[in-house]
Image (tube, rainbow, N blue to C red; front, side):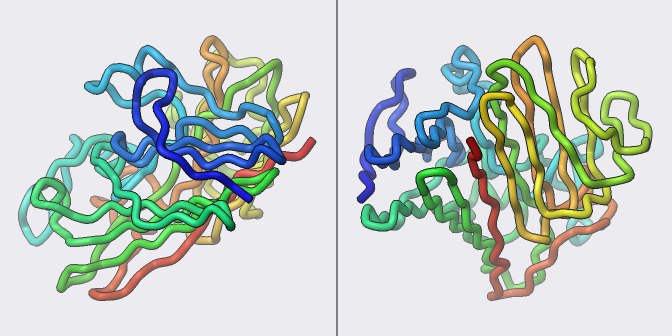
Length: 285
């Protein structure tokens, strides 16, 4: 049996908390700040990095947790794109993380919580499509799965990219292995052979993996191992590491940065239709 309750986190924010005392696993989601997963503990192991000082400042993007990326991943050229001859502006990683979400369902027996984000007059100013995003968070003793529904409520095809930006804390060390040959080094902006190991002694490393042969990222943190699995609609993964801040981001993306302009690997959902997909974070001890 699970417990789902409305509590205040240590920074004073109201959050939804899913927990299982039997397995010592819990997740906290701040619905008012973009539906972001801020805390995740599996079998007593705290997994997520969160910069508390930045998190407390509502004017800043949260540096930590698991931000939601929609309808773009990465940065648009000059933060702009065109739809039907009109110019629109979106911040880096889109708008979903900047609007409040709404709890629509919860099931304590199954450890499931559902949040929704619906288009509004404010979202239409940035993204001229009516939509409903419906995310189901499912907690288990060694995993958290996020089911996603992207529904187009507009009368025309809806283009977008989507993804997640998980920040994992590094307790001692970390080693990430990707079964791929090509990656974009986001620091030098050069396409390179994908390193066998990330990071490899750098103070900061950034790689957009272009041809992962598996729908999974495996990370070894010494004390434990994590796998981040995802649906095939996420062909790209960004790996970002900052040694001084002791975090590594393992990010599944459906498209490259600026896809709303380039149209490369852009997802399109027809009027009235829904794209269903998922990701899963799993602990291995």
